[in-house]
Length: 293
Image 1 (tube, rainbow, N blue to C red):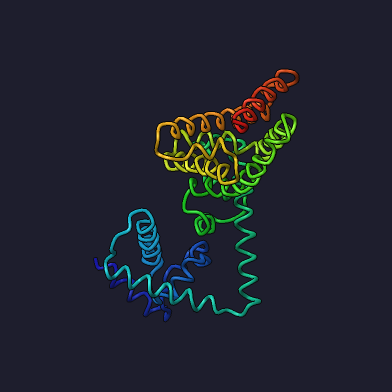
Image 2: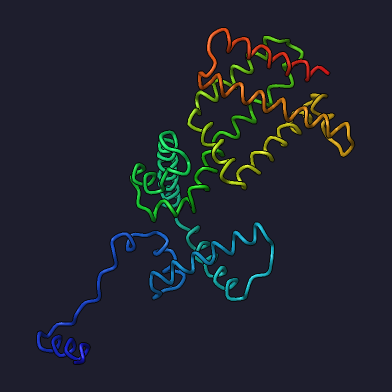
């Protein structure tokens, strides 16, 4: 029996036209669908989503492995860029409102992620737990972050400038003696306490995510160079291709690792009282002697 024919006859008998199933609520309110519909009007949601994924992958490939892309990808990117330019021409008040709303949503997701990562290991933390705690949909989450790893990078991005600012104060303290270096280390410990949820997260990320580990290593090397640029002779001598510079850089790297490890242990209260104070003094003395070489 022809099911399609029976359906058509039934529609004629009751004089109504059968409606297509409504678009699910999540999809009908998906900002990506609304935006891409303006780029490719009349296109189904699944096709729009596929186009967005293709463009995202193409953009990431360009950043990591510069190469020529097929012409049809370039054409899609041109249409998206044109649409983005029109969106950018919104009235200032409307544009400001939309940006504030995006910033507020992003901040809510980051706050929820910090809370989830504080309660669960990185591998056990689920994206669903994060967006539910933030009070947003899955689609909204992925509009801001492509993955759990990208979210973890964003959390790290929040504290990285604070670390750089703290280390920028270090070279000037060499002439002020041991107590100044100890006070600097206490400030470093306070930063670990303030961001105590980050310390275990960063340790796990370095174990499970090789890209993140490379970033941590790169940032540590950058701090050594930055200290040298600020006038610290011991760190400045850690530059260069010769054997002496390589040995000096390894010494600097090991020292920085000890400073960070001791600060984290004291912040986690794995050492307390006299033991913590003795350890802090010994590492501060080692740091001071290194900087005065």
